[in-house]
Image (cartoon, rainbow, N blue to C red; front, side, top):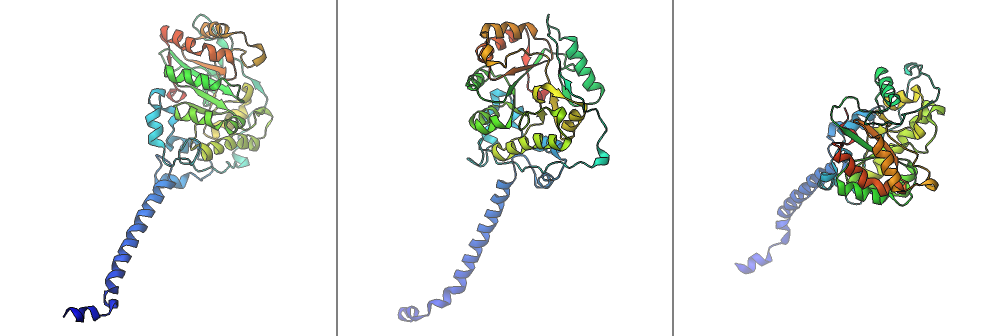
Length: 345
């Protein structure tokens, strides 16, 4: 009997083997497809929303559905960054790349006939815990014309401060500023040029993963009042698409280089889904050859603070870096609280 079994042909077992192999392959295919879908979709985006990401003119809606860690308070940014991280090494942050958006195309008959004359933004020097009338009037102008622009928070009743920095190149002090912000648990916005995030990706990634906002300060820092609408689109979306592809990140905040704008440019930024962010507190800190010491920076900034202030500093200033911790402590002692731009409504 046993001898007879051994003489049977092994081919009689082939159908069973094939059935097992087919079932295994099917399971592997389902598993691969399931994980491929999870890898393609950015964190927080559904399959239906994915289809809209490549449509022109969808910047504002996309910004509302993409998981944006810039609005995460600094004290909770570590866990939030871990939750958002999906593909380690895919970008400088480790986040999954976001789809780049096609450049917005405008129909000529839909473009409003707005003034293109350059407006040099002015904020006045605040004192006595009150904003200068120039800042007040600037915000009234934006609100009265229906522009999404922030120079001064006149809507909140509490003593809010919004800390922002402009950064076009690195002067060796940004890491120190980030250290202070992390220690003090203060959120900030860094309006960067493409040059800065390209040449200092580790600093840009740190800003994002530590809960700060990277704002759009354009590709090449031009005078927007002198650009065509097509050129403005390239400057703004060019920066944003680089962030999307290389950092897996986007944020709907724009600052005009040098504060120079026109109503036409203000409208264009809004059409792309951005809030234009100006300021009501600043000082001449950008000249690295004329730094006057951290005490000077402390005295200047604290003397100009007021409820609802948007503070604009330059991250190249050693004076600002040296005074940052003391400025934050003093402001809090006076009852001020630092809020993220995303808290402004």
